[in-house]
Length: 212
Length: 212
DNA sequence: AAAAATCTTACACTCAGTGTAGTATTGTGG
DNA sequence: CCACAATACTACACTGAGTGTAAGATTTTT
Image 1 (cartoon, protein in one colour):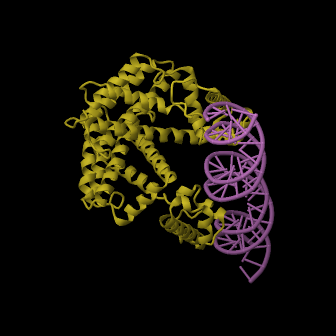
Image 2 (cartoon, chains in turn blue, brown, cyan, yellow):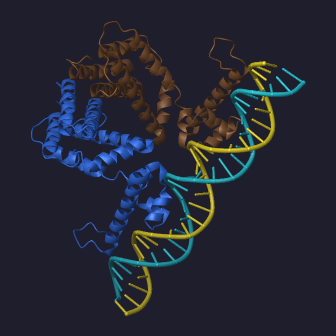
Image 3 (spheres, helix red, strand yellow):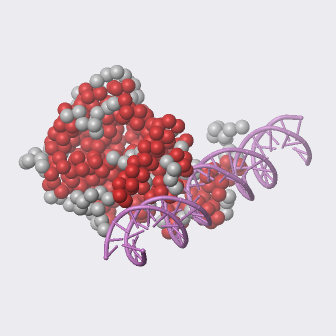
């Protein structure tokens, strides 16, 4: 019935994965080549030899064709919160970032690929907007995790403020890392510098609360 | 030629203002009544007895029919920065907010009208997204003002981070004010509480910089 | 009163996204 | 191996936002 078991994936599921990947690959290539706004969903469907509706079947919005990795990020943060010891939430988050940075995790690492990717995003207002939406979604998720970590109701304004500030810090830090990369500087140093300042602020704001 | 002089407004400009106001009024009424997503631009045009194109002539995007006050906000902040004395930028911003709060300025004041307005916004994902876009725009503006205030280049990451954190604080604080209002509590107290914490964080983060 | 500028309108178009119903393909039970 | 159920894919038609254009109406200028 359902392929939730670690069974053989089955022909159907394999084909689905293939189709999805094919569409995504074609779309990314076209977007990078011609710009997001100059490529229609029809173009993607035609190039992928698939019906227009099939594209929307896998990717509800056109923007999803290029942003399809948010779930990984969420899982990462969730895992980090799961086995923090007695660490408070904000320091735990700080440790997570530091760990990712030291381990040169792909999520934070700036490469030629990610540079090109974010250039493509920056050139389209639709993609930029979507990226901000994803930031907000992640901030909301993070806020919920923070609440759960300290046993507060999900509407706690402290958690929402802390999560928003942390996400801003991440975004500005990543932006600086990109800028450094483009100027042949060390991205890691630029990233860490902004993060450090951000954490100083968040820690100060939430000193005395259960969060920091 | 152009009506930049303090001349008589002229019939044409008067009619333009009237038409714009009429469209905006009709739109706001329809959106509040039936919800943003259940009212098409055609509906607005028909009800306002005007061509569809005329609506887009005044309001480039459908969302602009309801968000058309951002310029006032920008001007407010710009004015505050213009005649802060020797105050550092972040404290100046804090003083501005405190002043608006004490003066019960309409921008921050929660009333039955604003409550209803934000309910309408919250019910539509399109409007919520647009509101976030405006927040980002304001944060960018604020960042530029911060840079100008201390004579740094506009790309300064410190300014961008500070601006983003301040806008987050404002948004969360206003959200809490709304929540308080709906729970028959004092909105001002809820608002001020969040603001206080936010400023503690921002001031701590940027202590030692020219910003705070 | 004619001419120039500009506001409004009708019309046609592109493109994202949805709904529906039919066809093809795969999985399953006999 | 064959029905039959489930599900992916497709074709088609539709709504609704937003744009471009050219013609008509109204205001301003000369």
